[in-house]
Image (cartoon, rainbow, N blue to C red; front, side, top):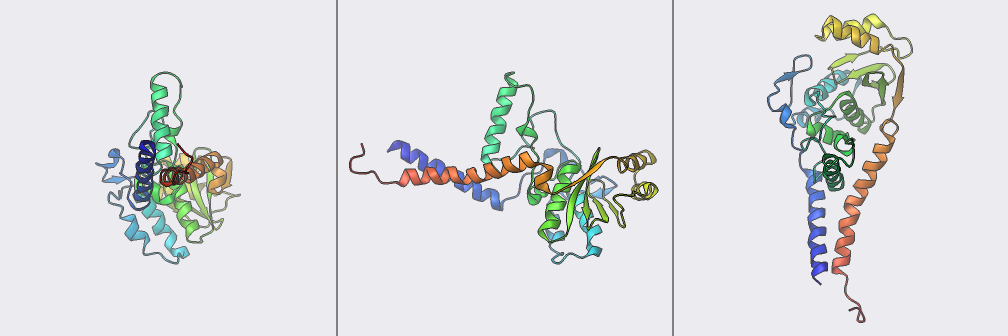
Length: 265
């Protein structure tokens, strides 16, 4: 009886956490607290202003893409801690309590030298809204977010990955680089105009050196992906844990309220 009561409260607690995670905002990483402007001198959105801004775009048109790119650029600060356990970066308890607990357990093993590298602590998010709410990420995170948003609004887009940088390709002819707040129209993926790339980044406010680096990157090998193709293992892992984060508390609740059979001791 005591065990069933315990399972009942655990089940209620976990389901409540799941529902809270569906409706609440994620806490911004503390590193963003003092950020005023970033990237090419655009303002950082501290208070999820992106929700109001994106609400203006119900039926996205070609002419809207550049402003949408800027909204995403403003919302995500270029930061990701790949080297250490970062409690402010990992999946939160309400977001996915299974990944949260596994991340802490992995950190315990790492601190006691049972494992040499952290994996779960560095997991990127896949849901575009949660990436925006967290407000941090490298080019891969912001491109996943932007691509997810565009696809949810029936815009034909894919993740375009070069050696050293990731952007979003729209309609096979437009580059949306929200990581650097650069928008490139009439892009030829198989015949890159290198000086056009240089000029776009230079005119956006980047230095000669940075613009030349981007020009070189666009000449490297590339691949296009849907999100499930870009991170197939992560896509499956997050999908499975999202399923079990609901199934486990439901099983606990069903067990806890199940009536005893007459011959059950």
